[in-house]
Image (cartoon, rainbow, N blue to C red; front, top):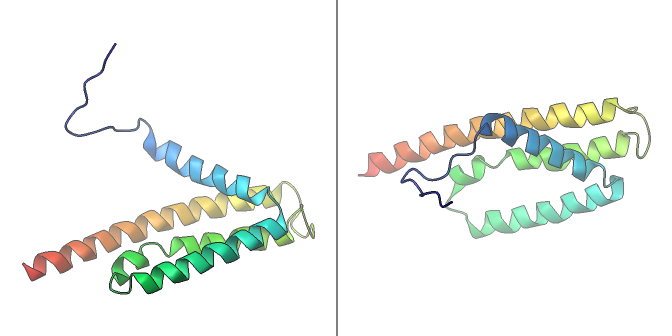
Length: 129
């Protein structure tokens, strides 16, 4: 049975639940890869961010909405280093809970930053017209 595509596009049912959970579980998957790997992944991602920032100098408002990624790139290796898969300072299951809760916080912070930046961009472009 074919379903017609509406003009409003596809809307994911329960997106308000699925999206944050997917982000938190993906952070856990990265966390489970272990400390040296999470550290190296963050270094490579930071290098990419720096290159991206230099290439897109004029788009500081758009870059501001992506600041959440810096937090996740710092938190995951730090908890991975201190967690039960390395130094065991943060014991199991509290390390997993910490990653889950902090990643949810970062997700909602990113949503808030993105909406504020989108409003700023719209105001900037409408004032030029």
